[in-house]
Amino acid sequence: MSSLRMPISSASRKGVSGVVAAAENQAVVLTNHGRAVARVEGANQVEASARLLREASLAVLDAAADLVEQRTPTFSLVEVCDRLGVSADHVRALAAERMSAAP
Image (cartoon, rainbow, N blue to C red; front, side, top):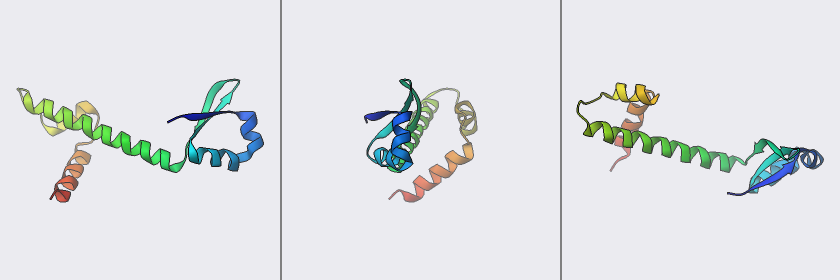
């Protein structure tokens, strides 16, 4: 998605409501002397980014679990989660949630 670059001086003239209105349609990158210093995004964009990040994290965990399953020796869920820096309890909760939602 493209973003609108806006100097801080212009953002100041537009005010908060002007910057927010612009951010509803596309991300606004605030610049100071041409250097990006802040980014303003609409709530929908932030939620979509968070959803993509969650999905990517789950895909990495699934791939790691597949690799672990194919190796000898076998690693426990706790060992895998420790290596990935993920809570084993969180993974178990997600698995239970997926199992209950499966047809």
